[in-house]
Image (cartoon, rainbow, N blue to C red; front, side, top):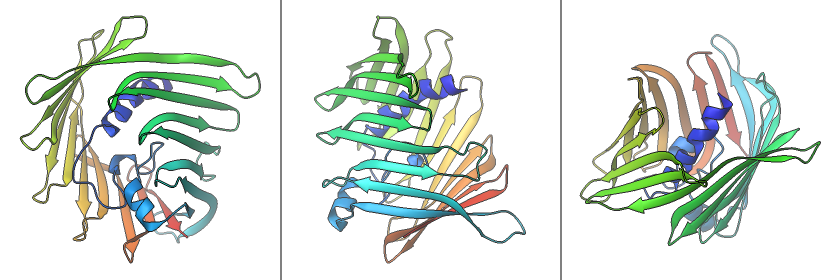
Length: 284
């Protein structure tokens, strides 16, 4: 499972680097909320002059009170509004390790991402040419022994047929890793993404849908064996994201609700419908 997660994460970063129009003002990468990749709008953070954000984590279960925990989140930003640091501690989870993410950028492109836990760490590095990702490398290491192992090293090639972008991803040694085809509509919004696995021949297809005000509204992904995961995004009238709901084969499995106060991020509610655990992050 860990290996699968690491293999698919590069594609998430690749899409994160691809411009998608219509995200809200403060949260501009909605699918990364609660995850490891930066999700806050750097331009908006810069305009507001924010250099740090802090939040405390509470939990709630059905028929129970909201309970305080020792958990917390911290974010730090550079002068351009880019997220440079995040720290998460969730002692109510079975895995109680704190997780630190550090980020570095060059010309607003993410070039370095380090994820650090108590006993180990992982590093992802990215190289660009003309704003396009051309090389990536992933390493894992143990703090005690200072040993590092390269787990993935990839090269990216691009072709541009009509209204499409074909990305061929190869291992640095030359063998093909994946093929990604991005299709765009008439106003250059991503409409479809197709990922082909050369070894298995399986194809994963993702469809993107937008609302009348050009905001990303739904992402529906069908994997190579027919399972469907759908993510739906709801917005406030002021264009801020209100909720992100995830469905698996039509069943609601998780949702994130975002609460604002005076247009500032106030709280994030994360509800797992399978465990019925709600996590509430209240920002200072």
